[in-house]
Amino acid sequence: MRLDEFHHYCRDLLCMDDFAAIDPSRNGIQVERREPELKKLVFAVDASLQTFRQAAELGADLVFVHHGIFWGRESVLTGAHYRRVRFLMEHDIALYAAHLPLDAHPELGNNGCMAAALGLSAAEPFGWYKGRSIGFKGVLPEPLELEEVLRRLDIEMADCNAVLPFGRPEIRTVGIISGGSSRDIRQAIEEDLDLFISGEGDHTIYHEAQENRINMLAVGHYASETWGVSAMAERVARDTGLETHFIDIPTGL
Image 1 (tube, rainbow, N blue to C red):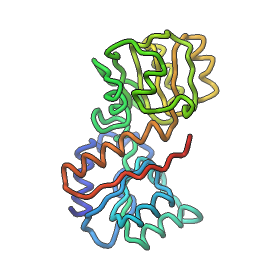
Image 2 (cartoon, rainbow, N blue to C red):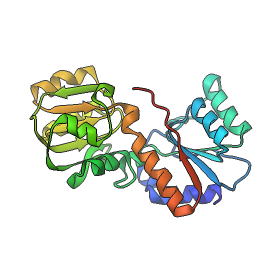
Image 3 (cartoon, rainbow, N blue to C red):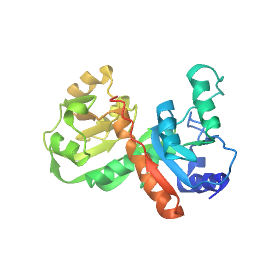
Image 4 (cartoon, helix red, strand yellow):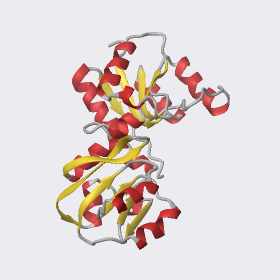
């Protein structure tokens, strides 16, 4: 598959054009490569030099990430930013980014995958950002305590950024927004949900959760956003026959 064909495939699959006007990320091809043909792809959360080095060791032609290196206005190529781009170009590795589209996709997105892992029924859009929904909310198949919710997400309580057990001990309704979404707890409060799951925690929402008697799990920005790139690695391999690898480089944040 050629690089331009891969771009059109991802753009259609993830409905990327729907987010072009609101996403600060420059989604799509961020760095090209000399050889247009792709055979081996690496998927990761972050476009770090560590990611690129591991991709080069695997002989990757392209790195697909959730957090790219170009956001909003064009950046000058100095410091760490220059070193990342230089490494990619020296090793002829393309870089591809999908930010909000990979949060919002119902099957391949971070939030949709977490909703599926929890078995949420009647799942519907939740978590609105500039007129578009990013997350999902739904009903658990049976009442669960916080520990069991985390177990189904394969996340240890000790690894969470924050655990705020201020709501009903038996949880039925859940809202999920990955990443830096802690302040969106207000949307969960407005909809009277039992539990709000975010990536990051924020000091300012502690009393908000406590006084509104809602449970909150901030499972970690990174941990909440491995789902989409992992799902994409599997989907791309199945659809295209290309060799794919997921690189796990947790930050603990």
